[in-house]
Image (tube, rainbow, N blue to C red; front, side):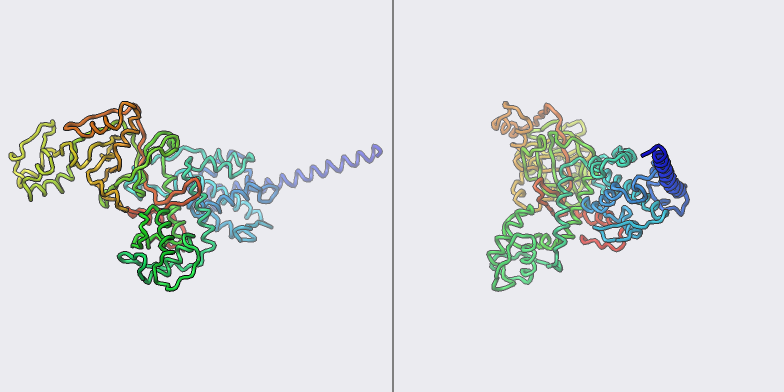
Length: 557
């Protein structure tokens, strides 16, 4: 090639380069100008009513209004990933519609969820999509980090720290703009809890099950108890439910309403899997659980994913005592491994056990029960008025604020009780309502873990029976494992629990006690666990979670 041809070729390349530069720069200028106008604060703008509007304005101002979800006029890989993240927010128990998905459908040339396409877009449409996705990012990131619902407005018994987690969501968005995969960025936003990760996987499984759900799920009431060998009109539907969940294989049965041995075996497996007494008897609670459709279970799981988002940041792999009130169970954990498990009794209705965390610092053997003023006024004094020997029978005594005993006969129990100036306490012993030992994690709610003389109550399936404190089965074993000292053997602990006076033993470290209320959680193996909503807290939370979808009807009402 001669010099003239080389010069011509170079000239053409330069012209083409200048033309392309001008073309793409003009396109970028048009885009940024339109983006700047849209973010000018005009009340009619796409995001004028968004709570994230100021954050979005600042974010684009800092990057000179350069788009992040488009490349060369087309939706970028990051844009596609972010829309997928919004669609998949249902696996967090959230609603994709809250993050602008319907508005994105309106602009899409193909609104099928799995094949959302954006072709032949106008400049205005591109800017609208850019801002909708960015707004969706800020909304979703905030809801994942802190929860969508404010627990202080919904659950008065949620006593955990309510401070929002400090996160700079704009910095996460900068990471995406710099090329980091959207999924990787969100891994740093999700709650740092194995329970949360396991819950997402369980929700994915429930949505897959829902795809194959063809049952009507009409509610089948059961009053009383139905035992194997009996007939009941609810049997056909409940058998069908056991088949649906895989606890009974499809089999030939002679009489539809007859509770046969095959169904009996499957029912026991179902009960055991759902934390029930596997007695093979169909009662109201069993029927209630079997009437839960996949959508019901998705709702219950969604509610509890929100509760996990409410949890304050803490080291979950540290030594701790974890009590799930809804599961009536205490677990002592070390490095996330369960070392000790015990059944517990929790607060009854109107005396609900709150959810909070506090450090356990000491154990009291052979404790006095210092009876709370409310119980004294509402229960003890009326009992004394009916039976003058009540205090003696219950081994109780009256004391002053300084701890001095008061003669019972010196008190006029019919007149001197309106502003009762004394305290009543129960002496140590086997009849003491706190049992023989209590475990103290001082808190403003006067809640602690203790033994009980009524140990037969642990055989009950529903154990919401206390005034709010946590009663524990096998307290001697619990004390031994907490003391973690060879000198505190079984004999010494038994001796400490059988004294006439209190014995306080300080622990050599403070152990976090965490009281939670979870009606769903998932194991590492993906198994979902569901429990009864003993305090009837789920429906109100579900309603708040779903309140933006006008067509949604709560399946828990």
